[in-house]
Amino acid sequence: MKRIEALEVLNELTAELPVVVTCAATSRELASLENRYNHFYVLDSMGLVGSITTGLALAAKDSDLPKVIGIEGDGSLLVNPNVLPTGGFLGPEKLLLIVLDNKVYGSTAGLPTYSSRVDLGAIAEAAGWTVGRAADELQLRTEFDRLLTTSGPTLLHASIEAGNAADIPKLLVDPVVLAHRFQGWLSPRLARGSGTR
Ligand SMILES: [Mg+2]
Image (cartoon, rainbow, N blue to C red; front, side):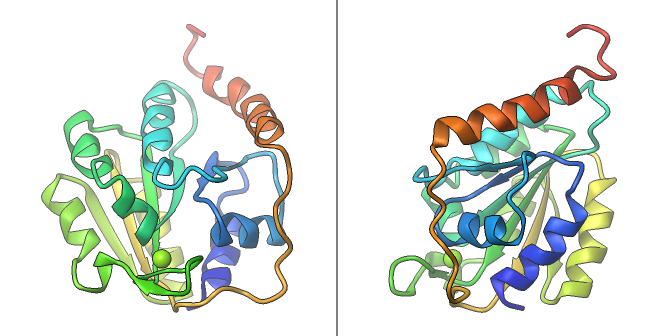
């Protein structure tokens, strides 16, 4: 499964969910498929998708949203692996973090990451997350659906091929604009169901 094939599936499954996406090729490829207001592209902030989604999942606790979705890379998660024990400690019910793991730094000449020898899913399991695994599009759909209805911090470890899709344009939208439009999409959905916001 190529990254863009995984993103096509995830884009279809997350039309009504907040989606926080890691930087570089992953953001560009998702935006090339569909550049939607429920996407928050975390440009130039490697390693922060898990932290942002943890905070949003806690904020969404009393909303009608089933999950807050993070799309991370292996290299990016390894920049900030503290996300995993933090999730185990805080136990955000509505967190679903998807790791597209190609075992390399896709934007820096394909140098290997630690995930080429270290199982990121096993680290998450040891920290108390519910973990699903996918190696093709069908498993990705099945495990996404299962974890979407599983309470607590959930991690979907998706194995993808190394390499980036060809001819994907740069994503040059101002990050301030990206944050503003995402906030506009998310705010009413966080308020819904809580009765307090
Ligand atoms: Mg990678």
